[in-house]
Length: 128
Image (cartoon, rainbow, N blue to C red; front, side, top):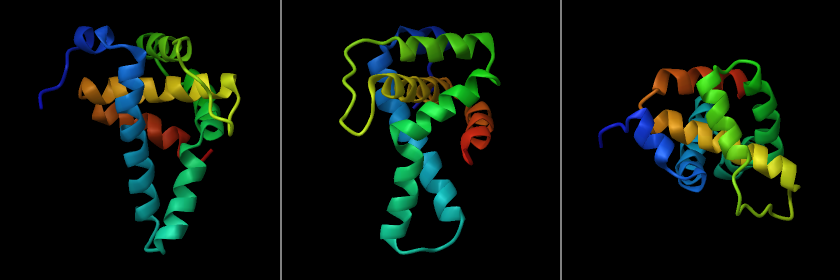
């Protein structure tokens, strides 16, 4: 699959970007966890859940604000301000909107082929 242009990716709804970004983010988390060494699948799952839950991604959102450029900040804000998002019982709405924003940014960067930037940003938030 070819990368999208920035304009094409920006035309996608925040929901579509978050849908894709969720799997991009989770793949990065799982790769990092597996690289730490072989463990039983239950342990791997428990480690993964800590990094993909809304509270963790909300903290990641705050960290990202200080290291992203203006264009990335616009994408992040667009994700945070998206409507039609209902927070699960395990999270509050503010946290969930920030988590969605992180997924939107990761989805956007992946779709435009900015893998190096994606890796850079993930490295900054991997150990919060």
